[in-house]
Amino acid sequence: MNRVLEYLETIAPNVVDIPDRILESTWQTIYMTLIAALIAGTIGIAIGVILVVTNKRGILEKLKLYNKLEQVINTSRSVPFIIMMALLAPITRSIVGTTIGTTAALVPLIAGIIPFYSRQVENALLEVDPGIVEAAQSMGSSPLEIIFGVYLKEGLPSLVRVSAVSIINLIGLTTMAGVVGGGGLGDLAIARGYNRYQMDITIVSTLLIMLIVFVTQWIGRVLIRKTSH
Amino acid sequence: MIDLKNIDVHFNTKEQVLHAVRDVSIHINQGDIFGIVGYSGAGKSTLVRTINLLQRPANGSVQVNGQNLLDLTAKELRQARKKIGMIFQHFNLMNSRTVAGNVHYALRSSNLSDEEKKIKVADLLKVVGLADKQDVYPSQLSGGQKQRVGIARALANDPDVLLCDEATSALDPKTTLSILELLKKLNEELGLTIVVITHEMEVIKEICNKVAVMEDGSVVEQGNIVSIFTDPKNPLTQEFINTATHIDQALEKLARHPSLLNLNREDVVVRLSFVGESTNEPLIARLYSKFAVTTNILYGDIEILHDTPIGNLIVILSGSAAQRSQAVHFLESQNVTVQQLEHIQLAKKSKVVPLIREKVI
Image 1 (tube, rainbow over the protein chains, first blue to last red):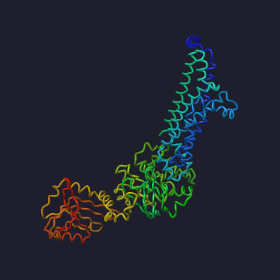
Image 2: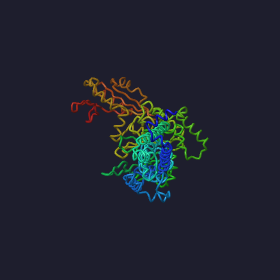
Image 3: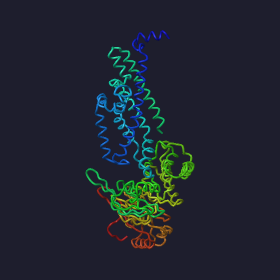
Image 4: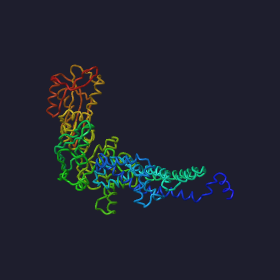
């Protein structure tokens, strides 16, 4: 055991010095990703569904609403995330009470991923065969029955796929949370690893982020296999 | 049962207005199997979608079972749709649900208890012959089996009407027949009114008692199946009938093998068509015994449509002019339509066509 530690100390001296900090950063990344994914996921699915049903030939066609929504999404997607964090500071303060910290970082994270995820959800649901929707209509299904019984159920494998992609995207965004004091592995890599020339910290942070990404992809694959028939 | 009056449907595209259905009126009685035939793009699918208002017509009225569907609220319309089943060319089953799950979906908002729904689903699957496939997913079924699930699903709410949109067009001929048999059985046993959309006259021939022929959004001819088959008025109808009875193919083959038509001066090629009773007479034998006219049969086809035999023969009649003329008179007295054919060369292509100019046989 001692020899292992000794060995680690020679190749990654700075990492061995701050094991607690590394654990904490990892947890911050996971925390930000999970909570943001949960909240943005719910809102994103709702917006994605609205996009699909209000679009042309949708079951509740309302082109005006669709066009408005699309405009908002396109506009917000064009704001770079790092700037969005600064822009949203007043809103963050009104919701969380502060603009600094891991929880405060959630607000821009959620706002940043929703437009992307809504689009992804829309595309996933558009893959549902319109014939199946038509069949459901011919059976006298109500719009709500079609949304939950057809779109979300038939589109589940695609939804899982785009969700995995979006979560990985979200993990990427969390690495910028350091700007507002959100911590996380990205902050660790920059604030400690880069600024203090502690390359080993940067490498370990990168490996940990990659590990989280791989686990997400793996869970996604398993779920897709489970939900496709 | 179903009463479509002056239905117009048009689609607005950027460049133009597309008239998919033009002023179509159709009346379908309880228990009918009503066929709508036409080439793709004729507007048949659009027309059938107006029956359950999946497609709202621009003009006209849609009455099903005494209810004017255009007057209903969204909720009432959903209720009415439950009594109008529909099956599709590509089956449109939900891939995420098992066979039983697909049928069960149709019963979602019914008042039955869970236990009753389960029994109903099992019964429906038994009716369509898929009792052993309950827990299988659609991806593991053949086309014919998928359509059977579609039928079970369409029947879940005990509909009065079943709309079939090219329901057999994606199936092979044998499977097509088995699905048509099932539809026929449902029609007879449940008194189900069925509307069949197809581009295949074979399908119409197999099950329909009435037919409408559509072209370019309009119904060009409609009526009872036997009268349409024996006396088609519209050229398009004639084309469909000739394809279904294979007369066109037969004429083509004869044209390609003129040796079959090696005629001498005593011979004529004629097409004999007859309906019903006369098919029971030994006509060909009579021609020889009565008039000494020999008959060489080149092609023959006898269809039985709703218990009425319909026959088409292409034959060479040989005998002196006087004998042939008597023979033809005799045939006509037996309600056989006699049409003389001739072999012509048109732009280096040889063809066998009905003789246009009057000529004494």
